[in-house]
Image (tube, rainbow, N blue to C red):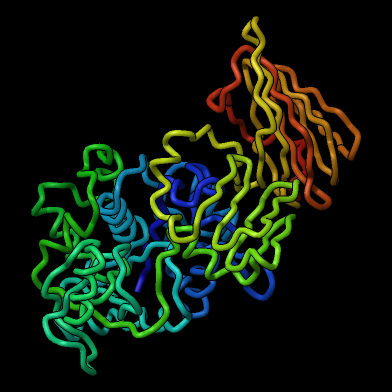
Length: 453
């Protein structure tokens, strides 16, 4: 079974740490073997342990390509969407890629799962059973459904056609999308399961569906006409219109870490980052990405989250639904992770003359590099803080170390990489136009050390 791993989201549910440049699945808040781990890294590790990672492909768009490769490694295969839309076009494009580019046959089975779920290791052993469920049931789609542990209005429900006993699978009777708590209690009594968003189908099945919808089935046409595909979920476009459906019940740990309260339940320490929580502040948590301390004194049941984009203080039970608040006060993302490292905007000033100065703290990970490129409208000044790096300006290469200042004039082709440890520097961008679109990329010159690139 090949796997399509869906990575998307706007990044507002876990503000201020998540943003459009770093959605929640990339937050390194969880831990494994005493080391930080993101939801993405956790799922990839579990897929690898279940021997499912080798034939797994990520589906995403925009800057998430770099984030995935930065966290998983450059060998991660990413099927990039031309624009961010919804799960129906994403899964359709990825399936066509598997058929046309990878060479998978129409009879091959594809499993689909989001990368921002949280499940026990046994979930992935269960996942391996989906192909056999398709075979046994004769279904077009086989889904995974988690047995609920409590009534919840955060999840959709799958209603089996019969009460849960000891069967390997059940026919699907209907779906209920995020009912209120009273309705969810009734559904649980009927044997309904949480919809995990995990399912499997044969490639030929989806190609036939696309044909019936009057849509192209080949990868090149789907990619070229991607913006014209229906912007809707796979559930609405396909699953709810498919008659032959089966569901595999999963009796184990599964949930969506979509709120700060649900996330801190999985964090071993109540204090992450510099700060202090008093003894009387029971069931309170601090997650602090800033270098200044954050403290809670005698206030129970709250969560404080601090990052470059802002500071959030919320009651644990009221941590849902902050998206409306974020829309009112949100500023442009000040923190960004890239394949080569990370950067934080420290200040953005504009003089009366229109001259702008953007100051950033940049960290390039050991052995990685920023591409060879130029800016036409701005000057850059780099002050090296720590680490040893290699800088190339207009084909001339030099080694840089702490205390050195490098000036890159507009129109100069330049490159910088870390060669001994992480390379940290303060970057000042100065010009009447300071924009991420002001960039022209080039092939690396022969003078650049091949061991770096």
